[in-house]
Length: 396
Ligand SMILES: Nc1nc2c(c(=O)[nH]1)N[C@H]1C(S)=C(S)[C@@H](COP(=O)(O)O)O[C@H]1N2
Ligand SMILES: [Mo]
Image (cartoon, rainbow, N blue to C red; front, side, top):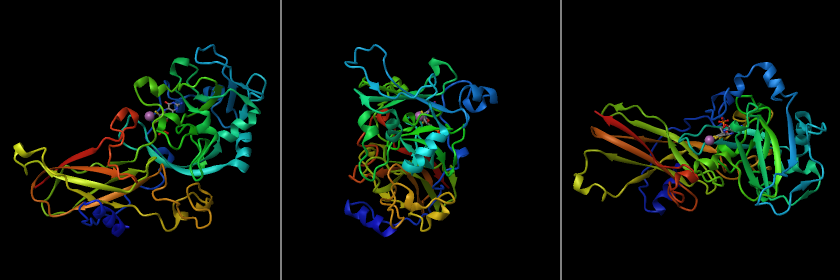
C-alpha cells in the first residue's frame, strides 16, 4: 500500500517520501454508543419515560410507519400523487417492525457507512447498517401515481415545530446503479437492534448523503407530486442535495513535542462520491519565511499512509455476518470491491521526524479519484463541509 501510494504521489509531482505511520488509529466500526449525537428536539427522545415511548410508538412492539400520499394544496402540484394501498394507523395497516424485518429476509441489505454532519467538522461514527431498501417498502403500497418526491420524518415530541424532515426524489429511491448502496430503512447497527439513542427502532439511512437525510425515529413517509425538497437543513442555507464529500480529518495533536522525537499525526478520511486516492499532509514552520515571501511559498504535500483493508473481516464484522453478504464487497471473494468502500471512512497516519525547534502548523487533505484536492470541487462549505483542517504545535 505504501509503495503504490508513493507511486501515485510521484506521478503528480509530489514528494514521494514514505512516512512510516502506524495505522489504524480508529476502529472500522464505531460502537453504537460512541457515535457523536446530532439530535434536535426537546426533551431528548432517549430520556423520555417508558410510557411516553409507548405512546410515541418508539418501542419495537409499538413502532409503526405510515405511508400516505400528499393532498396538501400547493401551487407546485399539478396532479395529486396517489397510492392504491396507503398504510395508515387509522385503518390498522401501518407497517410494524415484524413485517419490516420479514421483508428484510427477502430484500434486506447490509453496508458500511460513515455518518457525517454537514455542520460539524468531525465524522460522527461508522457502522454496519442493516435494513430494507426504501423502494421495497414503497412497493407494499401497490400502484403509485404522479409521485415525484418522497418526504419523510420521525417522532418529534408531538410538536410540529420540532419536526426534522428530509426528502429524496422518486428516482433516487427507486433506481440504484449496480454496486451502489440504496437508500434504506435500517433496523440494525453493528449486528444489534438500533438503540433509541441512534434513532431506533427504525431510522432512514441515506448512504450518499450527509447525516441530515438519515432521519431517526422514522414514522412518516409521504409521497408527493411536489418536486421541491422539504429538508429542514435547507432552511439553514445548506444544499439539501449535497453528496458526502471526500475529505481528510485530523486527530487532535499534543501542543508540545521534544526536539528529536518523532511526531505521529493521524486522522480519518471519508471516501465520498468521488472516491479517495490518497491523503497528504503539509507542514509549515511559523518562523521559517520572511514575511515578504509568505504566500509565495510552494506547498510541499507529502503522502500519508492509509489503513489497508483488514485481512480477516470476521474480526471486524459482527458475529455471523460474512463480508460476502455486505454490499460493496465482492460476493465471491468477500473482498471489498473498492478501498476505501464508498461512503465509508478509514484511518490515515504519518510520522514527522527530525523537526528543528519551532512553531508549526500541519494541514491534511484528501485527493479524490479525479485528482481533485480537498476542498475542491465544492469550496462552498454549505454544500458539504470539507474545509482543510489545521493543527498547531511547538517543538522545543
Ligand atoms: N429525527 C431526527 N433525525 C435526525 C436528526 C434529528 O435531529 N432528528 N438529526 C440529523 C442530523 S443533522 C445528523 S448529522 C444525523 C446524526 O446521526 P447520529 O446522531 O446517529 O450520529 O442524524 C440526523 N437525523
Ligand atoms: Mo447534521
